[in-house]
Length: 136
Image 1 (tube, rainbow, N blue to C red):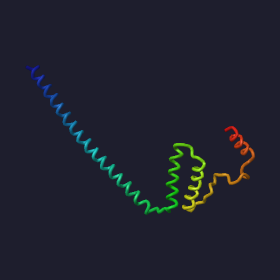
Image 2: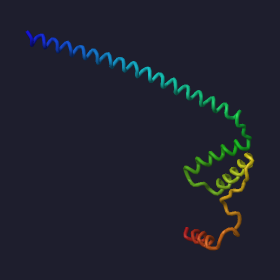
Image 3: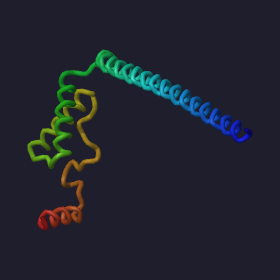
Image 4: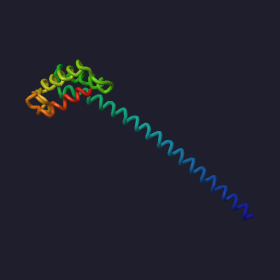
């Protein structure tokens, strides 16, 4: 009888543990569903806030039509440059757009890193530039 009682007790313990595990699984599944809903709500809130931010920025930081056009065209050139090398006309357009953007922002159109005349270039640098052109 002891074996029978022990066997019944073991079966009852197993059933109890299985029920407990099932309850824990159900509870965890409910918690996962709640967390997913919370994440979806937060994602929706983030999208709304980003939309509001974009709507508020033009009012806070007004930009001129010239600057806006320059920014749009520069972005287009950037995308093109990522896909392929820009041609000469596109490089010229880029230069003009950058200068227009700087002017509309009240900045200087001079790029301090550029050489302004051949007098600023030493002879050795000119020879290196010329030899590179010949090699190509």
